[in-house]
Length: 454
Image (cartoon, rainbow, N blue to C red; front, side):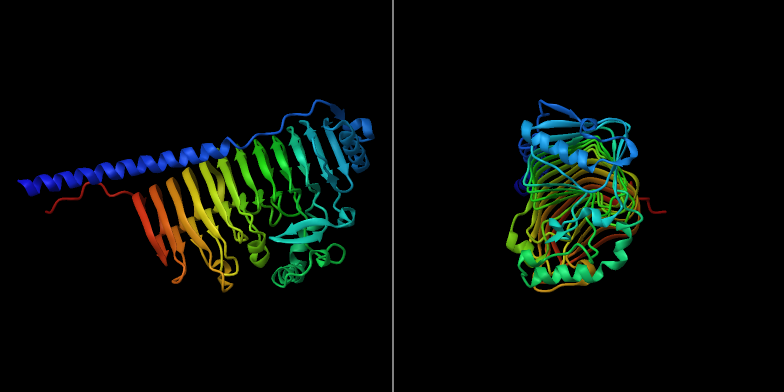
């Protein structure tokens, strides 16, 4: 009787412990997320208002409005801040818009900024980054460097007009891509990393570099040369309510890199590449820079494109404290959640929380790999503490849940709970992974009451 009582007590303790552990995990995620959100504040709108028409712009699709934007930025600086209103019309912009501190671009409903497709218009080169390596290159079409309090708002459209020129450079970029990576590995002095004329590294549509207090809200983005929104070494950014029809190659939606305290919410993605791709530098340079991307909340978004949320592959300074919650797929995604690294990278991926996210048909629902592209050596990444709760899809044509570590550097501490995949070619594929915990995971259906013997 005593042994039976002890056994019952042990079982009851185990039940209570596991239940409390789930509550503790859920509470920990919410507390941690809320602490991140408390540090994100959108900049207040400036007191002064200017019309771009006052500086010579015309929404006639013909007049070059770049000089008007340059003049408006100078006036904004004199006023120590201003909202620059772009009323309905098609505004041809014959070169990059270089933002200033304390500016708000309000692109009103019916307004369209249509940028020049001539690459020469985006010279001289500016300090930027390309696939995780710092270089001097063609200016991003909208560019801000070392600014504070920057907003791009309204219900209008930013059209990169890149399909006939910049987007064709993918086939020409290989030698420059390899050159940039060699400069990274060989620690070439930054002043000597000059691209631009005669080179084929495509510029980003919007890049905010070493900026603080950012708001991008309401706008529609299309026809980008390369990545659409690149937050580089920036912090305190809110991106909400925007939409995409950006189908050119490598048209990532949002790429935070070496950046922190970022809220991405209520976004309608439709991209020719990753919807959100969180990065933190490439290889030697990334490890030396050592600024992780962290404290990023992605919520209430609708995914459509190549992948929903990606971490990597350029993540050598590390990525941590990422929250992906209450999101759905509004169309096809090749992969739902994709964490990718290889032994060139090093760095870490940790404290990742996926909660209440659903997809339709995907190739792979959830995929962690430590050897992306099967390349690299010497710098295996640390991937640990990945928490997945309430993740689902209708069909995985390749695999449901995949983890690929290394024998000498396993992926550890991954927790799956309440995962549902209606059908999958391969349900689970875990290699070189340890302490993988699954609770309420159903792939290919759920087995109910067993049939009785006949």
